[in-house]
Amino acid sequence: MRVLATIFLLTTAAIAADWPMFHGPDGANRSPAIGLLTAWPEDGPKLLWKIDGIGEKTSGYSNVTIKGDRLFLSGSRNGRSLVFCFDTDGKQLWEYDNGPVWTKNYPGSRSTPTIDGDFVYDFSSMGELVCLSADKGEKVWSRNILTDFEGENIIWALSESVRIDGDRLYCSPGGKKASFVALNKRTGETIWTTPSLGENTSYASPILFEHDGLRIIVTTYAKGMFGVNAANGELLFTFRHEQRYDINCTRPIYHNGHLFMTNATTPTGTGGVLLKLSVSDGKVSLEEVWRNRQIDNLHDSVILLDGFLYGTSYGYKEGVFLCVDWKTGETRYEKRDVGKGSLTWAEGLLYFFSEKGDVLLIRPNPAEYDVISRFHLPEEGDGPTWAHPVVFGKRLYLRHGTFLYCYDVAR
Image (cartoon, rainbow, N blue to C red; front, side, top):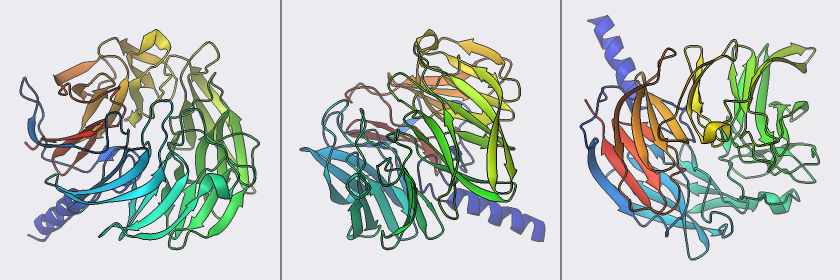
């Protein structure tokens, strides 16, 4: 009975865990949800509800984050960046105006709000970083990261979702005063800065890991990626990985002493690369293991599962689904199907969301492309479906512009 009770408590804890930031509890894009459908009806899982009004038209690409019975995401209306809070039945509880929103190339919000305890942190496309009470959406503090650290906005606007660890909040102004900063999450005051790299920031969100006793934060900048010491902001390494338009959107993946990085292959793009990390006397060196230009993901949607990378390409054949061996860089297969898109993982299966609104349930299999079920999102939103899918609490959340759809995927 004691063993059964322990299993029940562990299972309950897994189900109850929040989805507090972009790509989930640890940023690995794996859902703790269990008891999910292993196949969908022909017309897709049951639609529980939808929200129409997260701004207007192509109002943003923010994913949902979830704490308890509350959902958070960003959108825009009348040139303003908005943070929304809904309950899990789709009822709006509050919204907060976080200043001007990006109105040029692909207008609207980008970042996904980050939840920490009783607070929500939103980083607008124009650099406005705000801490809000999760209960009522009241401002605790705010500061403009571009202004404070003399940064410049980038071609398609700031898209980073901030990372919180302990009492610190991390983000990338890419400015003349600092390339990367740690702030006090309760006050917004600067704790440390990493000196300027002389380049703009890029679009990815930071990752955090420990290797050989050193806690390291890695993120991207216009020309590649860099790593800093989480204790003091000391620059540990830079790695040039260039793309014609400085698009480094996909976060590096750390696993077992190695870093994987990818960007969109163009005539000057570089695709995917795996690097081995070595630490000596607090210093980090990188050694290239392999390169593969085929795995050139654009929108931060590559997942490592059981020694294999899964995701879609961008420039390579204009978007195919790929499986690549983590150790060797060998492409196990490539399949042309619904084109480019994003994905997440839950209970052994991949949930793929194409930028044209196709939704696929895929069994990760290094031997073949194995689609179990598929359906198409209603033709209601405008523009590409670039927000990533989220599976949480036996529900599938899909965002398209001003719409948020909630599907029942309980078995």
